[in-house]
Length: 173
Image 1 (cartoon, rainbow, N blue to C red):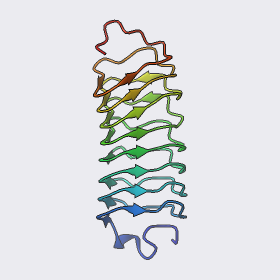
Image 2 (cartoon, rainbow, N blue to C red):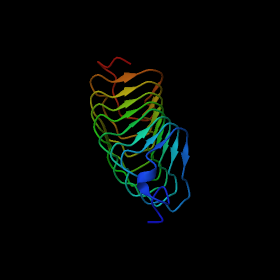
Image 3 (cartoon, one colour):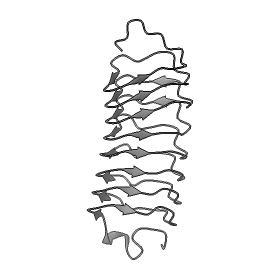
């Protein structure tokens, strides 16, 4: 299959120590258990599914792909860019070491989501944040439909609630 990676035999390569840059290619499939030590850039490709066991040591760029679901066991040590994807939900317990850029049709965040950097949800259709959300950097909820903060919310930097209906009563902001 000419649209699989690598182009010769899929079994040849399951590990790349540095970055794997495949943006704007015709790739449609990656090998199961692929490990990328650096950034994996799949932006603007025809790929529709990520393989099980995928490990990314730095950033995972999925902007403007046809991916609609992330693997349950996905852990990204850097930032995760999902802008313009067809993803409507995130797996429970997702861990992102850097920033999480959604800009998708997601309306709820899963339980146990951990983001080491910034989580910008401003102007999105997000209506609910589940318990156990941890954000190491800024959490921007401005201009969202969110009406309450969940129990156990942890934010390491700024919490932006501009133009929301959130009432701060018993919350520790």
